[in-house]
Image (tube, rainbow, N blue to C red; front, side, top):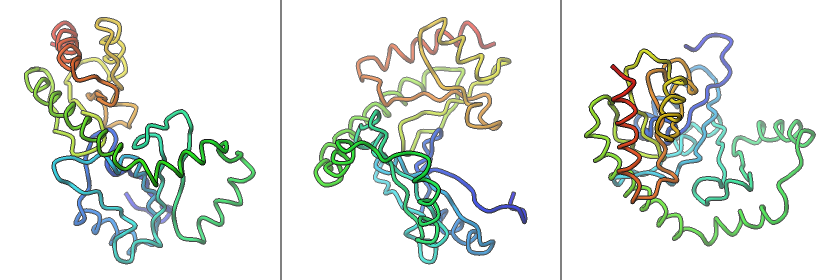
Length: 232
């Protein structure tokens, strides 16, 4: 897919919507391509704290020789539950950050003062809370895995990170119509896979970020009932 016009590519790790966590070996291959073609990777690492089964998040920028080819995008919305405060940041080579600042400073103002102070405290004092939240997500992940495995009309891989199951559902309906139909029939809101590009069609993203453990069974039962009615 790389052509003479290619300047950068974008991906996120851990991945939304699939939950894939890229290994150091996989990232080393990416770093090799970056160096060979002289292009930039813009890497969204917003879910870096959400990894399971003993995995560790590896930043592409940490690999030897990769730093000059990587722009990291991150924020406080996920790990620190500061969604509404809209605080994020970018980290990259100075030549790129300097040029970003020239444009950025004329487009938007900085986050409000209390959000900046909260972000600082989050990094310095909230590590225990983050670990507790990830443990909660992991319990939900495994409960959902157990329940979804009993639904016959879906296929999926157990997510390695983030907070989503990306469900393969073979239906005559496009993913947006399927999501709307499930929502109207069962009150269950899923994200159409087509929102993530053409290869996401025939998929629905099932988020467990705000799903209480006692309602996991109910949510999956609603999904199963909807699919039984609308998927041949």
